Amino acid sequence: MKELRLMKGNEAVAEGAIRAGTDGYFGYPITPQSEVMEYLMAEQPEKRTGMVVLQAESEVASINMVYGAASTGKRVMTSSSSPGISLMQEGISYCAGAELPCLVVNVVRGGPGLGTIQPSQADYFQSVKGGGHGDYRLIVLAPASVQEMFDFVFLGYDLAFKYRNPILILSDGLIGQMMEKVELCEQRPRNTVFDPSWTLTGKTPDRERNIITSLDLDASQQEKHNQHLQEKYRKAEAEEVRYEELQTEDADYLFVAYGSSARICQKAIQLGREKGIKIGLLRPITLWPFPKKPLAAIAPRLKGILSVEQSAGQMIEDVKLSVGCGIRVEHYGRMGGMIPSPEEVLENFEKLFIKK
Amino acid sequence: MDIKDIIKPENLVYQKTKLMTDKPLSYCPGCGHGTAHRILMEVIEEMDIQSETIGVAPVGCSVLAYDFMNVDMVGAAHGRAPAVATGIKRCWPEKFVYTYQGDGDLAAIGTAETIHAANRGENITVIFINNGIYGMTGGQMAPTTLEGMKTSTSPYGRDLHSMGNPLKMSELLAQLPGVHYVTRQSVHSPRNVRRAKKAIRAAFEVQKANKGFSLVEIVSNCNSGWKLEPVPANEWMEENMFPYYPLGDIKVDGKLIVNQ
Image 1: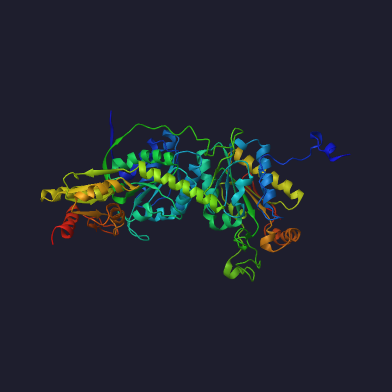
Image 2 (image 1 turned 180 degrees about the vertical axis):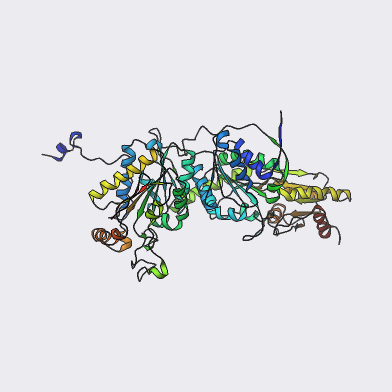
């Protein structure tokens, strides 16, 4: 029988964490994602699955606890919101460099600086273009519903271990705070087998010691390590692109939007179609790797593309890189925690593309 | 009698621990790190816990500690070793977890992680090498640099008024209820090496008994950074470092030791 529950996005991440067999969660309170750890602490997952939940002294400590815990080969994660995620960037870079599987959830709020506690999508560049130092990539998943907040914890771990790489769930304050129906899946058991080729379990006589590090003072070795990472990223680009198309078959125009903006655009498309304007939606589910090919495939049929983001226009750069110069691409968005209404999106679309 | 007649198993009085790799140490001649590494590895070998031990290397001179220590190890970001160790220990509560950190790592950039891991009573062992200077980056002032001590960033001597006071981390940490064992040792003479090794063993026994945070500070030298030859460096350490950082137990069995 289906197990249905009405939950906040943040609670769905927390319940997903328990059911996905997480071994350790390390976090620090910050609005608008504090419900993740609050839910976990109230739920006492140590009694349900043996999962460890620890409130760290800072986001810096949280991500370094994740780094240490991930080196044991266990399933570990943290969550935070924009300023806290900025603090974690050094540790995320170390996790990528040392090839540690782990999950980071960013429930984005408006910035820059302390910004606001309202929803935003202005951490796109930070998420998909690096964030920390060095040449590395995160696979970035963008949930657009509370259901996906739950599901992507499972997907995130699968990808994290497939690629031995940190995975970022890039949500926002709207998805984190809103309540929706969620279908919960069965409990997944925690890891019991640890890859002896790299995990820290204690050196036994049958193997050499394992060393987890991102350091190699020999530049030629460090370059080889970088080349290995890049090969991994190319594989992810080939195999992990995820996206959703909505009413693109007959569309003259296309909205490209992810997360909460995609939800807003769904309604805007409906309003547009009621007025006879055929608009479709492409929703990137993976922001990195970005769905370049699907976008390029639709673009020749279109009269224009509107990138809708709760930012000054960040994803639009990837949209433009995907479709080239042959088609007009515009941006519409609000900033600093303001959420555009569907009517507002449609009105601005019409101003840009229809009314001359 | 030929030397071959002497080198026989029955005449063996000392053997390098198998837990030290054969890689030549990267430390300066005269540096205390090599000895500290060796006694730490000897303790792990004697306790027969190699297969249950995970070490955390810092950033600093001992950043490559995992090249020399034959146990599973992870290299932490600068100062974050106690947080990294926390993550490991919470995932493997039955295993032994230690960090090996210098004073810049533990007492400057990593102060928050050190204090909070200690305050939570994380059941880990911290080996803290205090030589009053940043060795690897070229002899800059550390939080533990003594008053008036010349370094590359305090070329006229540490001025307490503008640069702050040398930080006594062990005394500070000993105040915290989660901390079970704190001691300050050195490795500059055979007698002190034996005492330091005993202290490391005691710290690991605390961890084995699941009693909480244990820390062994080793006041050590940095002859390169101090611009002294090895023997004068040790003499300078005895004359200047030990009065400010007195050797001996600071907290044993969860109780503060009241000296003098």
